[in-house]
Length: 483
Image 1: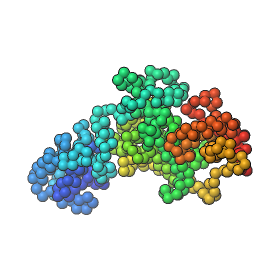
Image 2: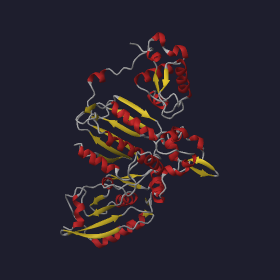
Image 3: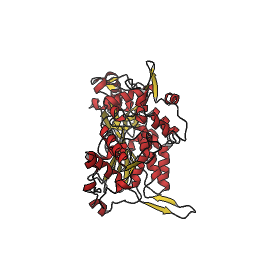
Protein backbone atom coordinates (compact mmCIF):
# COMPACT_ATOMS: atom_id res chain seq x y z
CA UNK A 1 0.00 0.00 0.00
CA UNK A 2 1.30 3.43 -0.92
CA UNK A 3 2.28 5.82 1.85
CA UNK A 4 -0.27 8.39 0.67
CA UNK A 5 -3.08 5.91 1.44
CA UNK A 6 -2.27 5.88 5.16
CA UNK A 7 -5.28 8.17 5.85
CA UNK A 8 -7.58 5.25 4.99
CA UNK A 9 -6.52 3.71 8.30
CA UNK A 10 -7.63 6.85 10.15
CA UNK A 11 -11.14 7.64 11.39
CA UNK A 12 -13.23 10.28 9.68
CA UNK A 13 -12.69 13.71 11.19
CA UNK A 14 -12.33 17.38 10.49
CA UNK A 15 -10.02 16.89 7.51
CA UNK A 16 -10.94 13.38 6.34
CA UNK A 17 -14.07 11.76 4.93
CA UNK A 18 -14.95 8.60 3.00
CA UNK A 19 -17.79 7.98 0.56
CA UNK A 20 -18.76 4.77 -1.21
CA UNK A 21 -19.71 6.50 -4.46
CA UNK A 22 -21.25 9.64 -5.96
CA UNK A 23 -24.86 8.48 -5.53
CA UNK A 24 -25.45 11.38 -3.07
CA UNK A 25 -23.77 14.28 -4.89
CA UNK A 26 -25.27 16.95 -2.62
CA UNK A 27 -23.55 15.51 0.46
CA UNK A 28 -20.29 15.30 -1.46
CA UNK A 29 -20.57 18.97 -2.48
CA UNK A 30 -21.37 20.03 1.10
CA UNK A 31 -18.26 18.22 2.35
CA UNK A 32 -15.99 19.90 -0.21
CA UNK A 33 -17.49 23.32 0.62
CA UNK A 34 -16.96 22.67 4.34
CA UNK A 35 -13.35 21.59 3.78
CA UNK A 36 -12.62 24.74 1.75
CA UNK A 37 -14.20 27.00 4.39
CA UNK A 38 -12.50 25.37 7.36
CA UNK A 39 -9.13 23.62 7.42
CA UNK A 40 -9.01 21.80 4.10
CA UNK A 41 -9.23 18.01 3.89
CA UNK A 42 -9.22 14.82 1.87
CA UNK A 43 -12.28 13.04 0.51
CA UNK A 44 -11.82 9.44 -0.62
CA UNK A 45 -14.50 8.05 -2.94
CA UNK A 46 -14.77 4.29 -3.23
CA UNK A 47 -14.52 3.56 0.51
CA UNK A 48 -17.38 2.71 2.91
CA UNK A 49 -17.63 4.99 5.95
CA UNK A 50 -16.74 2.11 8.26
CA UNK A 51 -13.99 0.98 5.85
CA UNK A 52 -15.12 -2.64 6.19
CA UNK A 53 -15.86 -2.60 2.46
CA UNK A 54 -13.67 -0.84 -0.10
CA UNK A 55 -15.48 -1.33 -3.42
CA UNK A 56 -13.39 1.19 -5.32
CA UNK A 57 -14.56 3.01 -8.47
CA UNK A 58 -15.93 0.94 -11.36
CA UNK A 59 -15.23 3.46 -14.15
CA UNK A 60 -12.52 5.75 -12.72
CA UNK A 61 -12.13 8.14 -15.67
CA UNK A 62 -15.87 8.64 -16.09
CA UNK A 63 -16.37 9.20 -12.35
CA UNK A 64 -13.47 11.64 -12.27
CA UNK A 65 -15.05 13.68 -15.06
CA UNK A 66 -18.45 13.53 -13.34
CA UNK A 67 -16.95 14.76 -10.09
CA UNK A 68 -15.18 17.65 -11.83
CA UNK A 69 -18.47 18.70 -13.42
CA UNK A 70 -20.31 18.44 -10.09
CA UNK A 71 -17.77 20.72 -8.42
CA UNK A 72 -17.79 23.22 -11.28
CA UNK A 73 -21.59 23.38 -11.49
CA UNK A 74 -22.48 23.42 -7.79
CA UNK A 75 -19.87 25.40 -5.82
CA UNK A 76 -19.43 29.18 -5.77
CA UNK A 77 -16.92 30.86 -5.82
CA UNK A 78 -15.17 28.42 -8.12
CA UNK A 79 -13.27 25.72 -6.25
CA UNK A 80 -10.34 23.92 -7.86
CA UNK A 81 -9.30 20.98 -5.70
CA UNK A 82 -6.66 18.42 -6.55
CA UNK A 83 -8.38 15.27 -7.90
CA UNK A 84 -6.44 12.09 -8.58
CA UNK A 85 -6.96 8.40 -9.15
CA UNK A 86 -5.27 6.31 -6.47
CA UNK A 87 -4.59 2.56 -6.80
CA UNK A 88 -5.47 0.47 -3.77
CA UNK A 89 -4.76 -3.27 -3.95
CA UNK A 90 -6.80 -4.33 -6.99
CA UNK A 91 -9.13 -1.29 -6.75
CA UNK A 92 -9.00 2.34 -7.85
CA UNK A 93 -10.11 5.19 -5.58
CA UNK A 94 -10.78 8.85 -6.22
CA UNK A 95 -9.06 11.24 -3.86
CA UNK A 96 -10.13 14.89 -3.70
CA UNK A 97 -7.67 17.13 -1.85
CA UNK A 98 -9.11 20.49 -0.80
CA UNK A 99 -6.99 23.27 0.65
CA UNK A 100 -8.20 26.12 2.89
CA UNK A 101 -9.45 28.67 0.40
CA UNK A 102 -8.54 32.32 0.12
CA UNK A 103 -11.89 32.89 -1.62
CA UNK A 104 -14.01 31.76 1.33
CA UNK A 105 -16.77 31.58 2.07
CA UNK A 106 -17.70 29.04 -0.60
CA UNK A 107 -21.30 27.91 -0.80
CA UNK A 108 -23.59 25.39 -2.46
CA UNK A 109 -24.81 27.29 -5.50
CA UNK A 110 -28.45 26.14 -5.32
CA UNK A 111 -28.73 27.18 -1.66
CA UNK A 112 -27.15 30.61 -2.09
CA UNK A 113 -24.56 32.64 -0.15
CA UNK A 114 -26.69 32.93 3.00
CA UNK A 115 -28.02 29.38 3.33
CA UNK A 116 -25.43 27.34 1.45
CA UNK A 117 -22.25 27.99 3.46
CA UNK A 118 -20.96 24.98 5.42
CA UNK A 119 -18.07 24.43 7.81
CA UNK A 120 -16.50 21.28 9.15
CA UNK A 121 -17.11 20.28 12.78
CA UNK A 122 -15.52 16.96 13.65
CA UNK A 123 -16.69 14.51 11.00
CA UNK A 124 -19.86 16.46 10.18
CA UNK A 125 -20.77 19.43 8.03
CA UNK A 126 -22.55 22.30 9.78
CA UNK A 127 -24.47 25.11 8.10
CA UNK A 128 -22.89 28.46 8.96
CA UNK A 129 -25.05 31.23 10.39
CA UNK A 130 -24.72 34.91 9.53
CA UNK A 131 -22.13 35.61 12.23
CA UNK A 132 -19.92 32.72 11.15
CA UNK A 133 -20.18 33.74 7.49
CA UNK A 134 -18.97 37.21 8.48
CA UNK A 135 -16.13 35.61 10.42
CA UNK A 136 -15.08 33.61 7.34
CA UNK A 137 -15.00 36.81 5.28
CA UNK A 138 -12.92 38.64 7.90
CA UNK A 139 -10.31 35.90 8.07
CA UNK A 140 -9.62 36.45 4.35
CA UNK A 141 -9.07 40.19 4.78
CA UNK A 142 -6.88 39.70 7.85
CA UNK A 143 -8.95 42.13 9.94
CA UNK A 144 -10.40 40.84 13.18
CA UNK A 145 -13.87 41.46 14.57
CA UNK A 146 -12.52 43.35 17.57
CA UNK A 147 -10.76 45.86 15.27
CA UNK A 148 -14.08 47.07 13.89
CA UNK A 149 -15.39 50.38 15.20
CA UNK A 150 -18.59 51.28 17.03
CA UNK A 151 -19.45 54.59 15.32
CA UNK A 152 -22.38 55.37 17.62
CA UNK A 153 -20.16 55.26 20.72
CA UNK A 154 -17.67 57.87 21.98
CA UNK A 155 -14.32 57.84 23.74
CA UNK A 156 -16.17 58.45 27.01
CA UNK A 157 -17.79 55.02 26.72
CA UNK A 158 -14.42 53.53 27.67
CA UNK A 159 -13.43 53.35 31.34
CA UNK A 160 -10.13 55.19 30.97
CA UNK A 161 -9.33 54.90 34.66
CA UNK A 162 -9.77 51.13 34.55
CA UNK A 163 -7.48 50.91 31.53
CA UNK A 164 -4.82 53.08 33.15
CA UNK A 165 -5.08 51.04 36.36
CA UNK A 166 -4.67 47.77 34.45
CA UNK A 167 -1.45 49.02 32.85
CA UNK A 168 0.11 50.17 36.14
CA UNK A 169 3.55 48.61 36.40
CA UNK A 170 3.71 47.98 32.65
CA UNK A 171 3.49 51.44 31.11
CA UNK A 172 2.11 54.88 31.83
CA UNK A 173 -0.97 54.71 29.63
CA UNK A 174 -1.86 58.00 27.96
CA UNK A 175 -4.70 59.01 25.68
CA UNK A 176 -2.55 58.62 22.55
CA UNK A 177 -1.84 55.01 23.54
CA UNK A 178 -5.53 54.20 23.19
CA UNK A 179 -5.06 54.71 19.44
CA UNK A 180 -1.84 52.73 19.15
CA UNK A 181 -3.48 49.85 21.02
CA UNK A 182 -6.52 50.16 18.70
CA UNK A 183 -8.85 50.66 21.65
CA UNK A 184 -10.15 53.66 19.69
CA UNK A 185 -10.03 54.69 16.04
CA UNK A 186 -10.77 57.87 14.12
CA UNK A 187 -14.14 58.05 12.41
CA UNK A 188 -15.49 61.18 10.69
CA UNK A 189 -13.06 63.40 12.55
CA UNK A 190 -13.68 61.99 16.03
CA UNK A 191 -12.35 59.15 18.15
CA UNK A 192 -14.74 56.24 18.61
CA UNK A 193 -14.09 52.98 20.44
CA UNK A 194 -13.34 49.75 18.64
CA UNK A 195 -15.17 46.57 19.52
CA UNK A 196 -12.00 45.40 21.25
CA UNK A 197 -11.83 48.60 23.27
CA UNK A 198 -15.39 48.12 24.54
CA UNK A 199 -14.88 44.41 25.21
CA UNK A 200 -11.77 45.18 27.25
CA UNK A 201 -12.68 48.40 29.04
CA UNK A 202 -16.23 49.41 28.09
CA UNK A 203 -18.23 51.12 30.82
CA UNK A 204 -21.43 49.38 29.72
CA UNK A 205 -20.12 46.42 27.74
CA UNK A 206 -23.27 44.39 28.38
CA UNK A 207 -25.37 46.83 26.32
CA UNK A 208 -23.50 46.10 23.07
CA UNK A 209 -22.28 42.62 23.94
CA UNK A 210 -24.75 40.98 26.34
CA UNK A 211 -23.00 37.59 26.04
CA UNK A 212 -19.45 38.82 26.66
CA UNK A 213 -19.21 37.56 30.23
CA UNK A 214 -17.99 34.45 32.00
CA UNK A 215 -20.18 31.88 33.74
CA UNK A 216 -18.51 29.73 36.39
CA UNK A 217 -20.11 26.73 38.07
CA UNK A 218 -19.15 24.02 40.56
CA UNK A 219 -21.03 20.78 39.93
CA UNK A 220 -21.07 17.82 42.35
CA UNK A 221 -20.08 14.62 40.57
CA UNK A 222 -19.24 14.34 36.90
CA UNK A 223 -22.24 15.93 35.18
CA UNK A 224 -24.43 19.03 35.32
CA UNK A 225 -27.47 17.45 36.94
CA UNK A 226 -26.99 19.59 40.08
CA UNK A 227 -25.10 22.79 40.74
CA UNK A 228 -23.41 23.57 44.04
CA UNK A 229 -22.14 27.11 43.43
CA UNK A 230 -21.96 29.57 40.55
CA UNK A 231 -21.05 33.14 39.70
CA UNK A 232 -21.36 35.43 36.70
CA UNK A 233 -18.31 37.56 35.93
CA UNK A 234 -18.89 40.82 34.08
CA UNK A 235 -15.57 42.45 34.97
CA UNK A 236 -13.28 44.13 32.43
CA UNK A 237 -11.62 41.26 30.59
CA UNK A 238 -8.08 41.71 31.99
CA UNK A 239 -9.51 41.60 35.52
CA UNK A 240 -11.87 38.73 34.74
CA UNK A 241 -8.96 36.26 34.61
CA UNK A 242 -8.29 36.62 38.34
CA UNK A 243 -12.01 36.51 39.14
CA UNK A 244 -12.22 33.10 37.47
CA UNK A 245 -9.09 31.87 39.25
CA UNK A 246 -10.49 33.02 42.60
CA UNK A 247 -13.64 30.97 41.95
CA UNK A 248 -11.60 27.87 41.09
CA UNK A 249 -9.40 28.30 44.17
CA UNK A 250 -12.50 28.66 46.31
CA UNK A 251 -13.45 25.08 45.43
CA UNK A 252 -9.97 23.57 45.54
CA UNK A 253 -7.79 22.37 48.41
CA UNK A 254 -4.54 24.05 49.36
CA UNK A 255 -1.68 22.31 51.09
CA UNK A 256 1.92 23.25 51.78
CA UNK A 257 5.30 22.04 50.55
CA UNK A 258 7.87 22.70 53.28
CA UNK A 259 10.66 20.60 51.79
CA UNK A 260 12.41 23.79 50.74
CA UNK A 261 13.49 26.71 52.90
CA UNK A 262 10.42 28.70 51.90
CA UNK A 263 6.90 27.43 52.34
CA UNK A 264 5.17 26.86 49.01
CA UNK A 265 1.42 26.49 48.49
CA UNK A 266 0.39 23.30 46.72
CA UNK A 267 -3.07 23.28 45.16
CA UNK A 268 -5.22 20.30 44.27
CA UNK A 269 -5.84 21.75 40.81
CA UNK A 270 -3.17 22.80 38.24
CA UNK A 271 -3.52 26.56 38.54
CA UNK A 272 -1.03 27.59 35.84
CA UNK A 273 -2.62 25.29 33.25
CA UNK A 274 -6.09 26.54 34.13
CA UNK A 275 -4.99 30.16 34.06
CA UNK A 276 -3.53 29.70 30.58
CA UNK A 277 -6.72 27.96 29.43
CA UNK A 278 -8.91 30.79 30.77
CA UNK A 279 -6.74 33.41 29.03
CA UNK A 280 -6.92 31.43 25.77
CA UNK A 281 -10.71 31.26 26.03
CA UNK A 282 -11.00 35.03 26.53
CA UNK A 283 -8.54 35.90 23.74
CA UNK A 284 -9.94 33.41 21.20
CA UNK A 285 -13.68 33.73 21.83
CA UNK A 286 -15.86 34.71 18.89
CA UNK A 287 -17.63 37.69 20.45
CA UNK A 288 -19.79 38.14 17.35
CA UNK A 289 -21.75 35.05 18.38
CA UNK A 290 -24.90 35.57 20.39
CA UNK A 291 -26.51 33.34 22.99
CA UNK A 292 -23.73 31.94 25.15
CA UNK A 293 -20.91 33.28 27.35
CA UNK A 294 -17.55 31.72 28.13
CA UNK A 295 -18.21 28.84 30.53
CA UNK A 296 -15.97 27.39 33.24
CA UNK A 297 -17.36 24.15 34.72
CA UNK A 298 -15.69 22.55 37.75
CA UNK A 299 -16.56 18.85 38.21
CA UNK A 300 -15.14 16.33 40.68
CA UNK A 301 -12.74 14.87 38.11
CA UNK A 302 -12.12 17.69 35.63
CA UNK A 303 -12.48 21.37 34.79
CA UNK A 304 -13.89 22.43 31.41
CA UNK A 305 -13.24 25.84 29.86
CA UNK A 306 -15.50 26.50 26.89
CA UNK A 307 -15.60 29.52 24.60
CA UNK A 308 -17.84 30.53 21.67
CA UNK A 309 -16.32 30.08 18.23
CA UNK A 310 -14.83 27.15 16.33
CA UNK A 311 -11.15 27.10 15.40
CA UNK A 312 -10.20 29.67 12.79
CA UNK A 313 -10.06 28.50 9.14
CA UNK A 314 -6.89 26.57 8.44
CA UNK A 315 -6.45 25.41 12.03
CA UNK A 316 -6.90 21.93 13.46
CA UNK A 317 -6.39 20.58 16.96
CA UNK A 318 -3.18 18.91 15.75
CA UNK A 319 -1.93 22.32 14.60
CA UNK A 320 -2.48 23.71 18.10
CA UNK A 321 -0.46 20.86 19.61
CA UNK A 322 2.38 21.71 17.23
CA UNK A 323 2.41 25.34 18.37
CA UNK A 324 0.63 26.75 15.30
CA UNK A 325 -1.45 29.75 16.32
CA UNK A 326 -3.82 32.21 14.68
CA UNK A 327 -5.18 35.19 16.55
CA UNK A 328 -8.92 35.74 16.39
CA UNK A 329 -9.03 39.03 18.35
CA UNK A 330 -6.04 41.23 17.53
CA UNK A 331 -6.89 44.06 19.93
CA UNK A 332 -7.58 41.84 22.93
CA UNK A 333 -4.50 39.72 22.24
CA UNK A 334 -2.26 42.81 21.97
CA UNK A 335 -3.45 44.19 25.30
CA UNK A 336 -3.13 40.81 27.04
CA UNK A 337 0.41 40.50 25.64
CA UNK A 338 1.37 43.93 26.97
CA UNK A 339 -0.12 43.08 30.37
CA UNK A 340 2.01 39.94 30.57
CA UNK A 341 -1.02 37.64 30.40
CA UNK A 342 0.31 36.10 27.18
CA UNK A 343 3.99 35.18 27.20
CA UNK A 344 4.75 34.09 23.65
CA UNK A 345 2.51 33.63 20.60
CA UNK A 346 1.59 30.02 19.92
CA UNK A 347 3.36 28.54 22.96
CA UNK A 348 0.41 28.32 25.35
CA UNK A 349 -1.20 25.05 24.28
CA UNK A 350 2.08 23.14 24.02
CA UNK A 351 3.15 24.49 27.40
CA UNK A 352 -0.11 23.31 29.02
CA UNK A 353 0.34 19.80 27.64
CA UNK A 354 3.98 19.68 28.78
CA UNK A 355 3.07 20.83 32.27
CA UNK A 356 0.24 18.30 32.52
CA UNK A 357 2.77 15.58 31.66
CA UNK A 358 5.23 16.88 34.27
CA UNK A 359 2.48 16.84 36.91
CA UNK A 360 1.47 13.30 36.02
CA UNK A 361 -1.94 14.39 34.73
CA UNK A 362 -3.72 12.94 31.71
CA UNK A 363 -3.28 15.10 28.60
CA UNK A 364 -5.95 17.81 28.32
CA UNK A 365 -8.69 17.41 25.71
CA UNK A 366 -9.40 19.99 23.01
CA UNK A 367 -12.70 19.55 21.18
CA UNK A 368 -15.00 21.49 18.91
CA UNK A 369 -18.45 21.01 20.44
CA UNK A 370 -21.17 22.57 18.33
CA UNK A 371 -19.98 26.10 17.59
CA UNK A 372 -17.67 26.19 20.60
CA UNK A 373 -14.19 25.03 21.61
CA UNK A 374 -13.89 23.08 24.86
CA UNK A 375 -10.61 22.64 26.74
CA UNK A 376 -10.77 19.96 29.45
CA UNK A 377 -8.19 19.76 32.24
CA UNK A 378 -8.25 16.42 34.07
CA UNK A 379 -7.49 16.32 37.79
CA UNK A 380 -5.10 13.90 39.45
CA UNK A 381 -7.64 12.94 42.11
CA UNK A 382 -11.39 13.38 42.41
CA UNK A 383 -12.34 16.45 44.46
CA UNK A 384 -15.67 15.56 46.01
CA UNK A 385 -17.74 18.17 47.82
CA UNK A 386 -18.25 17.34 51.49
CA UNK A 387 -21.73 15.98 52.19
CA UNK A 388 -22.32 18.51 54.93
CA UNK A 389 -21.56 21.34 52.52
CA UNK A 390 -24.08 19.91 50.09
CA UNK A 391 -26.73 19.63 52.80
CA UNK A 392 -26.25 23.05 54.35
CA UNK A 393 -25.55 25.94 52.00
CA UNK A 394 -27.73 28.54 53.68
CA UNK A 395 -26.49 32.08 53.66
CA UNK A 396 -26.33 33.95 56.95
CA UNK A 397 -29.41 35.78 58.14
CA UNK A 398 -29.70 39.28 59.57
CA UNK A 399 -31.03 40.13 62.98
CA UNK A 400 -34.61 41.25 62.25
CA UNK A 401 -34.47 44.27 64.53
CA UNK A 402 -31.38 45.61 62.72
CA UNK A 403 -32.24 44.95 59.09
CA UNK A 404 -31.06 47.92 57.03
CA UNK A 405 -34.24 47.75 54.91
CA UNK A 406 -35.99 49.31 57.93
CA UNK A 407 -33.69 52.30 57.68
CA UNK A 408 -33.40 52.54 53.90
CA UNK A 409 -36.76 51.21 52.77
CA UNK A 410 -35.11 48.64 50.49
CA UNK A 411 -34.58 44.88 50.72
CA UNK A 412 -31.67 45.35 48.33
CA UNK A 413 -29.52 46.74 51.14
CA UNK A 414 -30.11 43.57 53.17
CA UNK A 415 -29.07 41.41 50.23
CA UNK A 416 -25.87 43.43 49.77
CA UNK A 417 -24.97 42.89 53.44
CA UNK A 418 -25.53 39.13 53.10
CA UNK A 419 -23.36 38.92 49.95
CA UNK A 420 -20.53 40.89 51.59
CA UNK A 421 -20.72 38.67 54.67
CA UNK A 422 -19.35 35.86 52.48
CA UNK A 423 -16.61 37.73 50.60
CA UNK A 424 -15.33 41.10 49.50
CA UNK A 425 -16.87 42.09 46.19
CA UNK A 426 -17.07 44.94 43.68
CA UNK A 427 -20.25 46.38 42.22
CA UNK A 428 -20.18 44.00 39.27
CA UNK A 429 -19.63 41.03 41.55
CA UNK A 430 -22.54 42.06 43.78
CA UNK A 431 -24.76 42.56 40.74
CA UNK A 432 -23.77 39.11 39.48
CA UNK A 433 -24.57 37.47 42.83
CA UNK A 434 -27.94 39.19 42.74
CA UNK A 435 -28.57 37.65 39.32
CA UNK A 436 -28.36 41.02 37.55
CA UNK A 437 -26.47 41.45 34.27
CA UNK A 438 -25.80 45.17 34.81
CA UNK A 439 -25.15 47.51 37.71
CA UNK A 440 -28.42 49.30 38.35
CA UNK A 441 -28.80 52.81 39.66
CA UNK A 442 -30.62 51.40 42.69
CA UNK A 443 -27.66 49.14 43.49
CA UNK A 444 -25.28 52.12 43.36
CA UNK A 445 -27.65 54.06 45.61
CA UNK A 446 -27.87 51.34 48.25
CA UNK A 447 -24.10 50.80 48.27
CA UNK A 448 -23.76 54.55 48.84
CA UNK A 449 -26.28 54.40 51.71
CA UNK A 450 -24.46 51.50 53.37
CA UNK A 451 -21.13 53.31 53.02
CA UNK A 452 -22.59 56.48 54.53
CA UNK A 453 -24.11 54.57 57.47
CA UNK A 454 -20.83 52.73 58.11
CA UNK A 455 -22.13 49.20 57.47
CA UNK A 456 -19.59 48.63 54.68
CA UNK A 457 -16.29 50.18 53.61
CA UNK A 458 -14.09 50.39 50.52
CA UNK A 459 -11.04 48.15 50.18
CA UNK A 460 -9.21 50.96 48.33
CA UNK A 461 -10.56 54.11 50.02
CA UNK A 462 -7.80 56.33 48.58
CA UNK A 463 -9.08 55.52 45.07
CA UNK A 464 -12.87 55.50 45.34
CA UNK A 465 -13.36 55.17 41.57
CA UNK A 466 -10.75 52.48 40.98
CA UNK A 467 -11.83 49.63 38.68
CA UNK A 468 -10.38 47.26 41.32
CA UNK A 469 -12.53 48.73 44.07
CA UNK A 470 -14.33 46.25 46.30
CA UNK A 471 -16.44 46.50 49.44
CA UNK A 472 -16.41 44.64 52.75
CA UNK A 473 -18.37 44.65 55.97
CA UNK A 474 -17.29 46.87 58.84
CA UNK A 475 -17.63 45.79 62.51
CA UNK A 476 -20.92 47.62 62.51
CA UNK A 477 -22.03 45.68 59.43
CA UNK A 478 -20.97 42.37 60.99
CA UNK A 479 -23.12 43.28 63.97
CA UNK A 480 -26.17 42.98 61.73
CA UNK A 481 -25.62 39.24 61.29
CA UNK A 482 -27.48 36.71 63.39
CA UNK A 483 -25.10 34.65 65.53
